[in-house]
Length: 126
Image: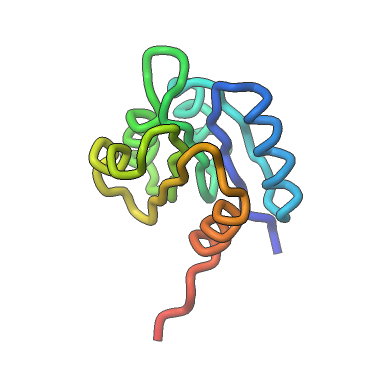
C-alpha cells in the first residue's frame, strides 16, 4: 500500500525539518515542503497531498488560511492548521473546511500523530 503523502507548510526552517523527520518516522511520505502561502499553493498542485500541515502565520503576502482556501477550492484536502494563536481565533478565521483540525504551538507531537492518523484513516461507516 502506498504511503499517505503530507505537504508541510512552515516558514521556520528548523521547525519544518523537525516536522518532516517526525512525520516520516510515523510512516508517511513528505511529498513537498513549502515556506510561504504562494509556494504551498504551487506545491499542493504539483504533489497532490493526502493531507496538509499548514502553519497559519507565514512569510510573504499570503498566510496559511488563504493558501488553504485556494488549495481546497481546487481539490478538497484535509488541513491541520498549526498556530501560535488560540484554536478559537484560527477556527473563526479559517471557516469550515472538510476534516480540518487545529494544533496550537508548542506542538504536542502525540496529539499531532493521532490527528494525522484519524484524518488519514477514517473509521468505516456503519
